Image (cartoon, rainbow, N blue to C red; front, side):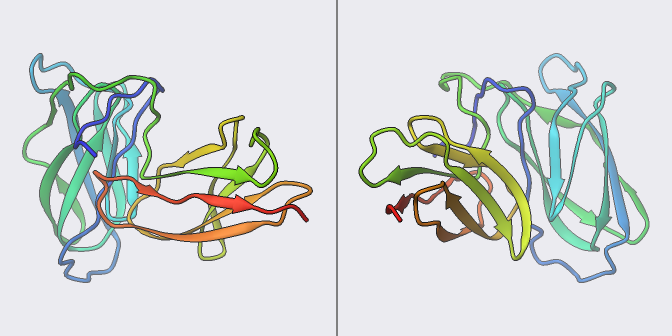
Length: 199
């Protein structure tokens, strides 16, 4: 999958996995601002993330991430119509601020209409050509992360930061099915299809 995603939904998503984290107590913060790298215009609605912490930029393009561990990591930002942007950062205890704005570049040539996702797939109902109405739930351990209901094509998608997840598909009259996925690279999409037999 290409390293940029153009989508037709409101705000897009992004995130990053902390690499080589130094451990530290998870109480640090990081603030910064996101701008269009060509025009210098501030960008609102950018989702920025570092490790498991994420936030959207405000009307002034500014964001603050909280609950960070100290160490080195990769800040990632994504917005509709812009390339995924990554910035290496080093987090120290307490409040941190990016020395420079996060500059994003517009994408070109990507098909519109695809919502941002790191997990996607298709649900198939045995004996049915219409797979609408399946409740697909994304779980991290026992905690529900997200949920959606399929349309007739049975397709589902979620955005989730790095980690291990369970995808559960359920519909009345069919046997509930689950599958495991791991999100490791936030510029790629993990695909999992599930087939539900009749009860």
